[in-house]
Length: 287
Image 1: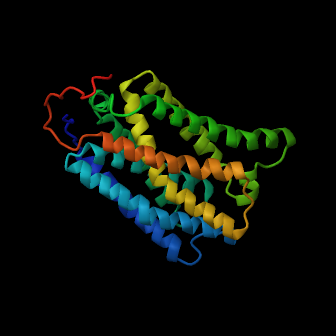
Image 2: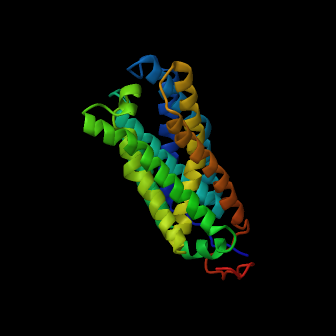
Image 3: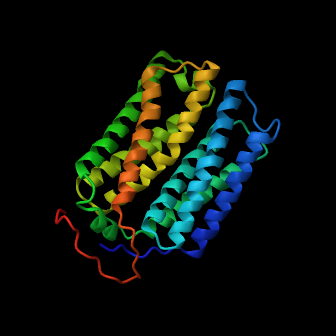
């Protein structure tokens, strides 16, 4: 079975290289520049854990995805897109939750570059070809179930904090415990949960873009998992109060998503074709 050619525009490459450079600069400043962050020691430890995982996982994943995609790898294209989604999430979180510092414009630039590069990269995907390749090679009901379960679980987790706090006139737990503002709720309920729900719905109805969005979100989860694990470990050592459901629904779905991401990428045939080549029939005959 053959796969479509992968073509990145020059601006995709230049924008991604800019993201890599700015992300490395931000993480190194956060890790080694004294006074870069303000706030409690607990929050400082969380920020540095995030910086470390961005530098150790997020940047290498994005660089590897770019390199592979430029060589025509469809797997590389999804690694690139999923890593860009991770960058959108992380840098929007930094811009929304951190106290103002000298690198604020850097966070803003990273958010803008990541968002528009992700959007441009998605427009370059041949969704029909991706569906043709993956149809019958992944268990669609299983993937749909995981995406839907994660959307419902994450939404219920945060709403279980927001609704009682709204009724009681108090602050939600994340704000009270971590002093991190409302950014986590905004990003998860405003972006992640709807994206998971839409991907699950599209994939359930066997739509081409369901295969694409599912792959991007699963790779995003795989890249995000080490960051969440690191921050939870820091919270545990610094005495931050975390409920069991919060810990489970924060750490477990991304870890499982990483396994789904591996299965998804392995289902993509490794061979490349030139633009315009015809696709061979799906081996299983299932559509």
